[in-house]
Length: 110
Image 1 (cartoon, rainbow, N blue to C red):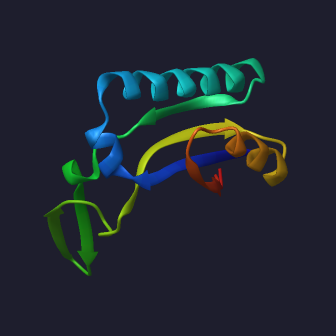
Image 2 (image 1 turned 60 degrees about the vertical axis):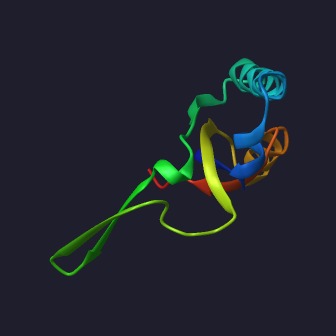
Image 3 (image 1 turned 45 degrees about the vertical axis):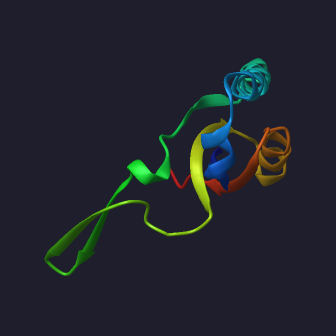
């Protein structure tokens, strides 16, 4: 089964991180991605641009409202995603637990 692991967290510390701190975080993500690849579970993923760059499209009947910014105004935002192949939710949780971030797991329906 396919699962998407949504990386969630407060974007402010990342915005303020220096080059050495960012390099260390990217190294942890590189190791995580290598582990997924070795297990045959890596189906892709990516870091997302800061939520302040988001555009939200909302529909109300035939009307479309386009606004700048994220869908929800919260401290924690989705900052990336990883798509994995896992036997079941237990294995998806195992893979998510190795991620160097907080994560929300969602099973893909197709």
